[in-house]
Image (cartoon, rainbow, N blue to C red; front, side, top):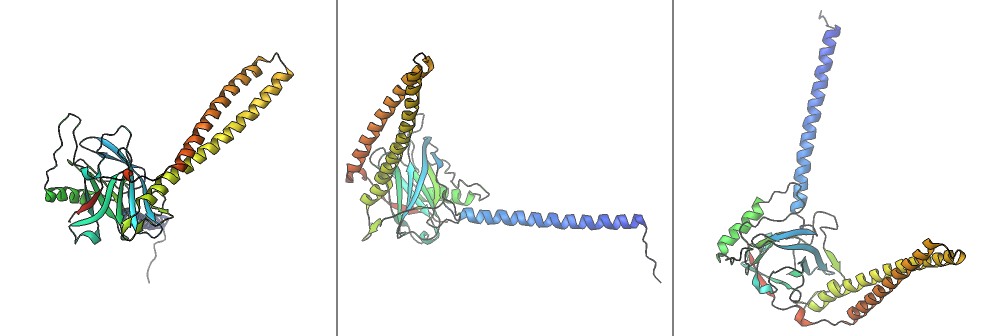
Length: 325
């Protein structure tokens, strides 16, 4: 006949042992969930673009740029990156003064790929066009081959494609997908910027998704620069000016109501110096707003009547070197 130990001391020991086991199991589950979540996030990030608005710097010349927008057309025949450049930038204006290097799974079997890279006019944005993009991530490097360091020393590219490939390949392999949503590459000693771009990002957020332009940009295997300009620049400029003009109209009408109230207040009490002072201040504000409205209206009319000029897109780089693993 067995004897059961039901003493309070034995009961307490058993209870604490069960609690310890539950806590241990819970802790292990939490660690596994954290690791799984981190791996999943890394997978999502690895299959997404660099987010729009990411600042990029050419390290040798310390020249700044920003991945401003990502576009595709309604048939998804092209993938476009637009990079803004500060007005004060001394980066070259010719697309042919840059070396473009790329890597993606579908490109590894090729030595070069067809692309279009350049700057709008001589001082505008950089643009990169990838025709017929696959649903994969493209790692892109833009190297300034005409660089001069801040100390006045000319930057010299090694000229050895294999050395550059190794640098870019190392930048890609060294990148850690650990919650760093910038997804930009360290290009080391090369005066280059690197980023990622895809037509089908895993991140379902506006910052990662390409804006779909309601037009066809590839026709008979030729990129339609005029449509690109009209949709990305002209249309956006016109819409922006219209919105500014509308906002200014609202502000003007609000000030007009304030002026009317101040006029009535001053009429009822001619000795009200505060009302008279407000009258004068509002008159100046209304005059200023009226001038700004007129200037905006002139700009809007000018932009609406502006015609596309082929000179906006010259000195285009049409080849990218493929980075091997």
